[in-house]
Amino acid sequence: MDKIELKEMLFYGYHGVLPEETKLGQRFIVDLSLSLDLSVAGNSDDLHDTVNYAEVYNLCKQVVEGTPRKLVETVAEDVCQQILSSFSKVQECTIKLIKPDPPIPGYYKSVSVALTRSRG
Image 1 (tube, one colour):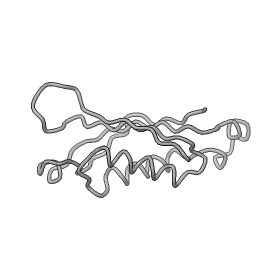
Image 2: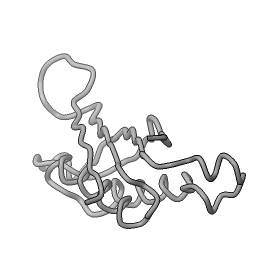
Image 3: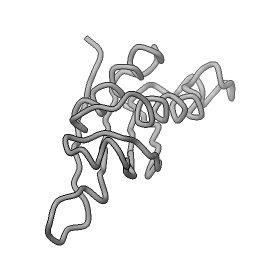
Image 4: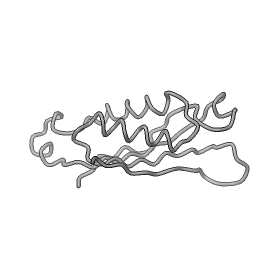
């Protein structure tokens, strides 16, 4: 299956369990991979035969910067479900949602969740 990938999209949201996360907010980094057949678009050179990745970016931005959630798992699930609902050509959506600065003690680069959702 062919892929459209959007890497290292940076958003600012207010998701988290701790009060400072929902009050101050924090950065979120999102990697998306969309599986779909790109052969028609590759031959037609017509945007209508593919998925407009600017629209995918905007949808992702609306979810991540939108309604605060306690869990990043919920944010990731929302992104995948909305992409599958909004873009009929997408057969599978894989997301990696990264929290680079969670308020937990210790030394680490980031924490993240990754999930894949398919049609059917």
